[in-house]
Length: 140
Image (cartoon, rainbow, N blue to C red; front, side, top):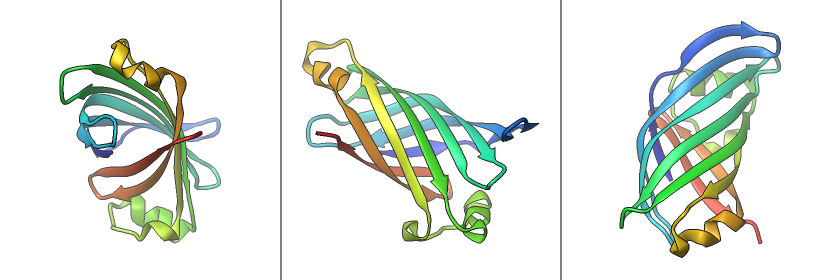
């Protein structure tokens, strides 16, 4: 899944860190069983006092044949402060230099996609300058 995101809108310092939100503008997902477009979404983020970034992701997606899917995810991105600073500035960083994982669940009403309602997936993330790239794997 490749997501294109806006620059974060910053709320500011709250009791656990800096709260901000990134608006998901568009994207694309490709898989063995389902492919399509990321329509819109939001990623509520908390930059914790220890420098780690907590993610709370909500996406609306549509398969190539027009079926709706909602995705929810919780994630964590952390690493050495210099790497986190580079990522925040939009600098391309090798994904082996930081930890970026998302736990995702899905909702779909179409009977052909009912299997999505009964799985969890783990996404291995890589932050590119204009948004993240995830490789999702179903937990068995």
